Length: 347
Picture 1: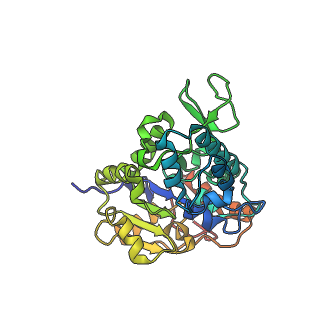
Picture 2 (picture 1 turned 90 degrees about the vertical axis):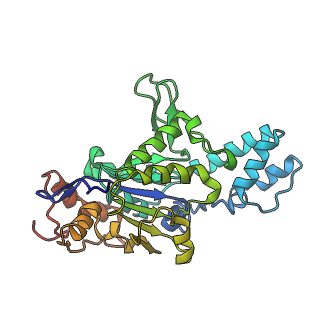
Picture 3 (picture 1 turned 60 degrees about the horizontal axis):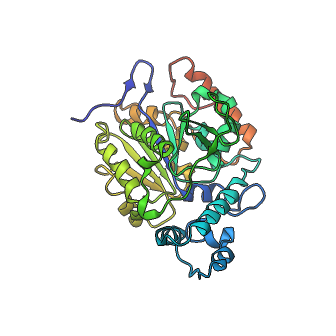
């Protein structure tokens, strides 16, 4: 039976989570000109060229014909004949992504981590370290406990694991329990065998996302198409979304530059009635119009018929200016009561 979100009318707080799901398109939109040093962000259709894997593949007497990287990797693994090459590819991919850095100026990743609260989650399919770096350089602004949760659904070069203690942390830190250095999280899997439950780290990341999806009141998908080649990922998300008793009232925002009908078709199984919007720009999304207040503002507008005035993220801010802009919102949250007033207006 459909249920209402966890809305506290007295304090204007909606405790149901906002779930953000990121794909490679999000990183490309955030850094279209490359990272801090101009290093290009590879996509699956050009990863071999960008990272420079073609000479390595040819050393083993193979010819790369421009296939999607995941298909090439899948074929190598299943052949059973190129274990050494697969290991070298793994190392090259980890090394390339591991060197990437956010530029000094504010990026979309900074807006994302500062635009959500600790009840919310950002789940990424990306190997690049940008989400982790944005989290690290902004958590002092609102406090670690008030930052959104983050989940790395395909592993990440910035995140390490301690298998013996079943803990995770920043890649080059040590485990708090045994004090041993974290090991890398696995990045590459054959596309036809992405059995997320077989890896304890990935399984825990997926469980965190699923727990949030089960109660989500707002979902933002940024640059991820839920491809049919990743059938297990689609199933893991769709099955738990089907259990969400609030989904009849919830909203999905999809940020993608592909044609609208193509985008809608990709997410048709997740859309309830017409509760969705497709945007090509992050700053046109509800999350950007109501940073740190997306679920609260949406509930007040749709369930209480008392819409709040938009409080749009200002575009083009320096990182320091963006952090200063967010601080009053974080301070208001400490009171437990949300005014609904835009930044700069008295509560």
